[in-house]
Length: 596
Image (tube, rainbow, N blue to C red; front, side, top):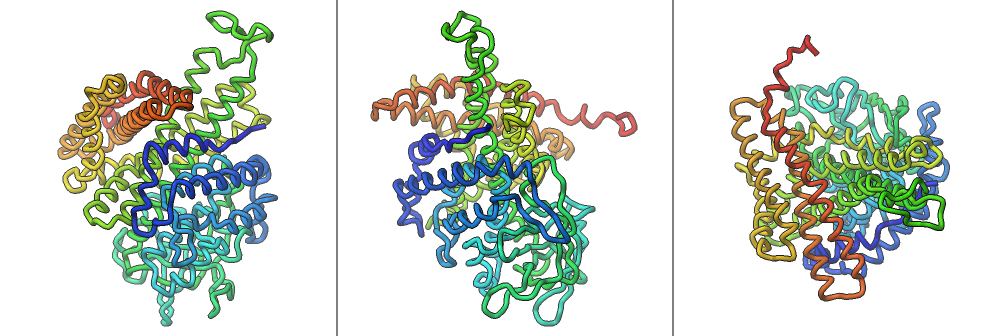
């Protein structure tokens, strides 16, 4: 049977020591936030994940959701677990206290999302989608909409969705056909079909609030003519409680490869009553508020799956006896040595471990900058943080979800044949992980966003938000003998990243296909360098702790050993990605379509 233990020591190390999360208490609204409070929340959150959510992960996968005459029932135990989760305030951990939220930093919520996704990714979809709906309504909703919907979303009594995709369009939202006609009373009649709607229908909450993209009459063509509407399953009455059933229904649920306990719905809107959110024809801007929040959440799905996959692979490698170590017997009292003694098994485990720990630091750093972007008193500092988040979001979404699938695959490989069968449970992680590479914008789209949008903003302004701190770190520590074995690989890979950036910018001016051809390899190169930067920060912190806080030497020494592995065995991939970027678009575009 699979296992999961929340990695609280590693999480606390990144938050407290590497990122100094306690400094967020200096921001407006976070005065009560402290290291002790953070630890209490993480401890309780980890307990909820390990004791309540994780035991339902496998049974939820095996049972799946049930669809009957438009109604969806979640697997056994999910409703009770959700009630416990909601009553604990976890749906509103980082939400506005003015509407009943706990008002904790986004960074802390990011850490909680990791543990939820490790424990039960399907379960995490339900409150995760509600968080996106909350973000859109909080930023763009009217005062009346906020008063009506936000407290219920925060309490978890109501849940939310985002309804974008239609049968004929996914990424190209300019093609949507769902329409919204004025009803003459300030509301609109929404008609159309949306597909792949996560948590579109279920039995966990008393109401479901759909955020729907649709077109007003005579709206401009393409994305400039899209508006956003809030369309509740039950129309709230004067007291703010669910009233009459709205004109919408779930037409079917999808039968999926993974996340089977998450209801993925076809939603039919047939003259459903909805209300405009934000400005007419500006719906895409509001929807991207949901999308950006969701993309960081999806990144945590990749990290969460990677962590639980690694934990199970490590446990199996310590227990499974096969052959003797190549350099001599290690466990003479046993009929064979555990497979963790074998170099290739250690390669798989260390690959996962080294990527997970640096990815955790990168994701939490992104969450911390979200807090700074929202709360810092200096507008210039807010802008810098917002720029960095905009740059890093497609990188962490794409890379961490790619790695979630890869590390789940390494876990299966570590188990061998036992990993491929259902008995041990790790095959579920690979099935669950794959969707994170696809939804909220496929990873190819994330790469195009990076090279096509983020790279060009302000003549490279967003890139400088990352490049400058890395360059500064290298310059400040290049003479530090204790750090040189880590700084030099970072410096070399960073120089090539800068070279690749300049090459893409120059070549794409003449041929847009150059940017498209380089996009995926460039994003991977960028991510690998970003993780190297995180490892340098981790090592620097570990070295400081070793000299000032004796007593936990093994923990900090392990960080440095893992960093060495990353620099020598994982970071070199950035060189090959650099070569692919520099190869250009010629060989990709040369083959005629009929020759494929």
